[in-house]
Length: 609
Image (cartoon, rainbow, N blue to C red; front, top):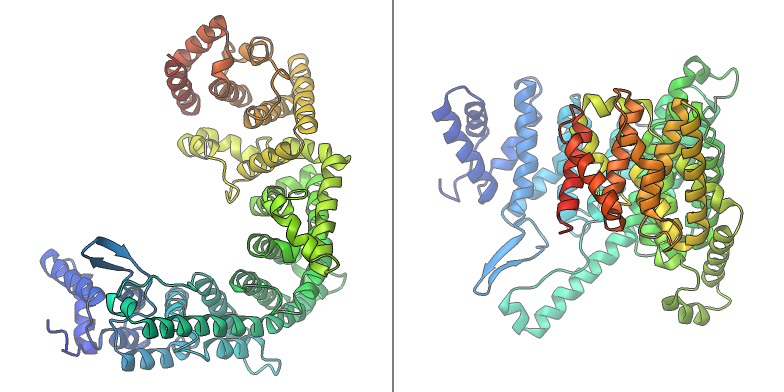
């Protein structure tokens, strides 16, 4: 197919249909044509695909979805991220998607938003949102300067010109676009020999890139106050439980999602004077929503569906949490003055969890609270008197930023030395490391996945409650190893003693959680504090000898096997032999999780010699 030949709608439609047909020969040939269209400059393909997407009365829904996916792929694939050179393969980040003509690009951009807002099918909408975000990453702000302003106008228009659905679509598009913009690079790799030889051209290239990034950041900073106003307006409607509270809650939470991505795009808080005000109001709202069983005002329309209202409110709590995490990731020093309020809020929220709220609460909410605290304790900026910041703090003495940093350091230091610290360690063990009923069910119903999740590497970004709690526990121990070790070992000793005297299943769960804490922190527990060999002989070995199908006993056996992996080098010859016999025994277990743990232990023990 010649590169200059313009492809029409009927031709594209025919290729799409044949690629979905049952005839393998015709299907394979059509798929090769589609692949060619994604890799080469073929005029008319993209505009034809989008025309098919919009042909609601002429084309079946599956065909329109297919065309929307292909449109997204054409834009993505024509943005070639690699270039070959005589020195091998050099990876570069190009500034534009060069294989589509400017005329076709402009035509497409002019029709994308109308196409989105007139599309009733959600599956097509999803693909169009991805497409818009992809184009924005390449062309905003230089070649699509009005994109953010158009979406903001629809999303935040106070005159009620647009429906809730249109506002919601605008916010979803904004969210996607801002997410894409945070990946846009301020610097690009230059591999053109001609450009590198011409200093004037290189300077002009760098100047153009710098101006583009400044415009981008300025546009996002200008959007921030409007997003905050939208959040306040719609969260107020939600909080009062007024008419249309469901739509209002959706818009409020989408506003928070956009705010979060804007925080990650912005280079500094300086360009957004209302940032401090936003976090102040967010802290107030989060403090109210901290009560998981909060209800709408009596007599309000939301009282007709309290559970649904509560879920929307809980989503707001999670979104605020995500905004705080974004601020720590991107702007820890500027966020320092506001950090202490949220740290206190999330520490108290974790410690006040009841059994009922724990069972009803989504895992995501618990994950985000622990992730926020873990990031604070692990962030070098928030270490007590970090050496890299001392000179900067001295230079800024008297400034609000310096005072905020000093306040943050003082608050964190007092926390680690105060009575709240051991209580938080205890709460993490009793509320986050204890197995839930659902996790015990997964042990038998999906053992491979259970084992995989239980053996993930330490990851502060994990979406698993126990993994995030492990990370937080480790970071807390790093900051105050004596106090944390004392709490962990005391709890383990008491739990083991009570579980041995009483067959209460809850005590066995607690004992497993305490042993889990030792397993996680074993490398940090001060030498001489715990004799691992004696610990195995006295408290652990007896579980390996139990013959039972009880799930709680089996979880304890799994924990003991994993503990043996952790401190195998500390075992005496007698304990080593006993551990080896246990690994061979459980290798034949019908319990797949225990069998997998035994494989891991056997590999560790045999690797010792």
